[in-house]
Length: 320
Length: 320
Image (cartoon, rainbow over all chains, first blue to last red; front, side, top):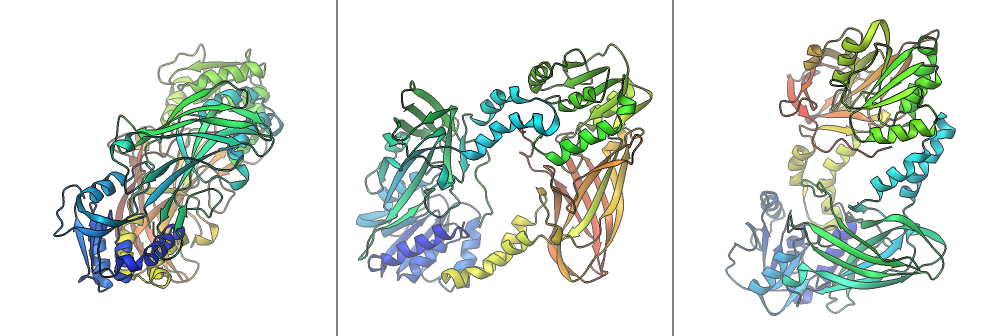
C-alpha cells in the first residue's frame, strides 16, 4: 500500500509534525507491515521503535530496517500484538489500521489493546481520531447498466427491456461495494455520522458504531445508493491537525469508498431530505468482517431498511 | 455478456451468414443464457429452437422469448444438456461455450455431448472450430510494479529496493492471470499451438489440449510472460468464414487474454527464439477448472517449466 501516495505521504507528514513528541521517545508500530511507518518514526528522532507484525511480511521488514541501517533503533517483532511482550511501556503508538469502510478487517482492536496494555499515561496515538461520513449518490455506471437492456433492441434487434428488473436486483444487492465514487455522482454535502476518539473508545463500543444522518440534496437526480467513507486525523504537534481523507471530494486512495445500493432508484429534487440511521457491526460469521445496517427515508418515501456485508475477496496480500 | 459487442455481433453475423442452413431447420442452443443466440437463429429462419439452460437465467430467457413473440419457435428448456430430453434430433447446434483461456469453466463438454446425442449426421455446429495461440510479452504494468520499490527512497527517504525480489515472487506467480494485454507489449507474431475441430474432437481429447510453439522476437526487450488467447470460427455458408478473435491485436472482449508469468524476466533481442510446449488440462480439484503446464526455452537460457492455474473467483453471474 506504499504506492498509495495519499496514505503514505499523510502518515509521513503526520509523524514529522509530531516529532517534538517522538524525539528521544519509544514508539510502538501496530501492524508494521514493511516497517515504513517505523522508519518514519526513527527519522523523526524516536529512541526506540517496536515494529509488531504478525504476517510473514515481518521478514521483509527486518531486511528493510537493516538495509536502512536502523536496526539499532527499530526492533521488528514477528507476532500478534495481543501475545507479544515488550521490555517497556511506550510513549507513542503509530498504526495504519484502517480497512475498507474504516472497520472491515481493520486492526483497530489491536491498537486499543496496545493502548490499554503498553501506552504510558498521556502518551500519543497517531492518528488519534477517526470519523465516518455518508452522502446519497447516483452511481452513473449502475444507471448505464440498467439502461443497457433497453438499448439491445436497437443494437441487435432483440427486445431485452424485460431484463431491467432482474438486472436491478443483481446490481442493487446487499453487498457493500468498494468502488471509486465520482465526485459528480455525490448528491449532497457529506454528513458525519460517527466519530471514534482513539484515546477513549473501547473494544465493546466497536461492536456497534452507529449514528444518525440528514442530508439535503443539491438538485434533481435519481438516488441509487448511499456512499460511506472515513477520515483519520493526526494531532498537529505545534502545527494544525492533519487529516487523511478517503472522501470522494479528495484525491483517491486504495480505500476508495463503500457504496450501499438501495433496492430501487428514488428521484430527489433540490433540498429533498435523505435522513436515517446507520449501524456498523462485526459479522456473525467472522468478527473481522463488517455488516452495515441502514434505515433511510428519502423525501416522502416510506422508510427503507437494508443490511449489507462485504463479499469475500476484498483483501489482498502482496500489495505495494 | 451481451454488452461484449465483439462477441454478440460476431455470433449474430455468424448465424445470419449460415441462414441458408438454418432456414426451416431445428436448432439446439447449448447453454442459452438469456436466449439471445436462440432469437438470432429464429430471426435467421429456424423452424424450431431448443434453448437449453441449466441456471435460473432460464426464467429470464422464457420472459425474453415471450416479449419478442417467439414462443412458437423457441422452447426454453431449464435443465442440464446431459439429462434433458428433446422430441427430435437437430440440424444445427449453436453455443457460446468458451471460457477464459478457452477452456476454463467452458461448456465444450456439453456441446460435444449434444453433438453425439442430438445432432443429425451432416448437421452444422456454430462455431465449428477453435484455435489457441501464444506469444511472449513484456507486461509493462508488472515491470512498473517491480521498479516501484527502487523509487521509494527518492519519494519517502526509505530505501525499499530490497523488496524487489519478494515483490517479483508475489507478482510472477503460478496464477493464470486474466488481463487485457496491450498490443505494444506483445513481442512476436502469434503462434498457433492447438486447434479443435468441433465435428471430431472428443471429450477424452479435452483432457489434454497441447502443442508446440516457436516464436521469434521482434526486437530487444525483457520478456516477463507468455500470453495465451483463442479464436473460434464460424463456417461462412455462402460467404467466407468468420473469426471471433480474442487476440491482443484485435478489439478487446470480456475474455481478455490469459497471462502466464515466468519466474524472472529474460532479455531477448531481434530473432531470439522462444520455443516450447504447452499443455492445458482439467485441474484435479475441479474438472471445470483448467491448469496450464508450460515448458519454455528463451534463446540460450535453460528450459523453464512451470504449472499454472486460475485462482478462484474468475466467474460471475449477473453479467451483461
